[in-house]
Length: 144
Ligand SMILES: Cc1cc2nc3c(=O)[nH]c(=O)nc-3n(C[C@H](O)[C@H](O)[C@H](O)COP(=O)(O)O)c2cc1C
Image 1: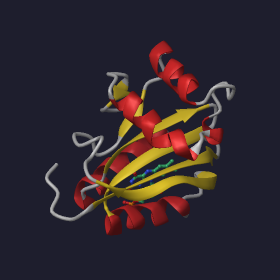
Image 2: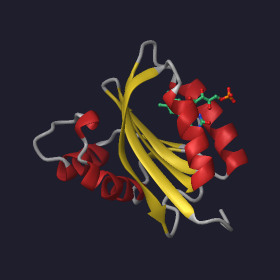
Image 3: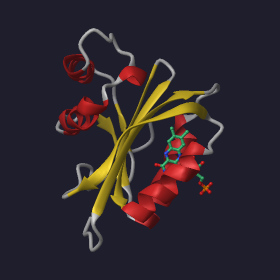
Image 4: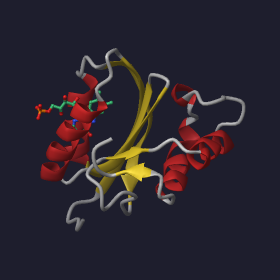
């Protein structure tokens, strides 16, 4: 994706409300994000989401304020929000993490002692965590 405006990223975690319908969330995300020039990745494990959004600051804030109002989750906790020089997920309007031995090992290596509790992700390691995940092929770019 080509960018004319400065880039911004936002990473947050939240707790899912039941029932969790990731197919619908991803369909909405891909449609809106493509229109707004947002790219990113989403993971869900044991009822906890962690999401990485990147794009212009205005677009990221717009999408994030919609996401915060969404009744399908709660307890939204921002882990990191800052200007960045380049995209991590340039090819994907919103990709979905596949849990494999590798992606679990990566999470554990950044968050030792947390088991697989995404909600407790350290804000300092949130971006490096996504960078390590992004370098794997363990993503579901199409329907989950
Ligand atoms: C965990 C989670 C992640 C979401 N991610 C996105 C996203 O990246 N982009 C997006 O447009 N909507 C996302 N949504 C959905 C928005 O909250 C909202 O429902 C949607 O943007 C409304 O789109 P619509 O007005 O086109 O129906 C997400 C929702 C949840 C619960």
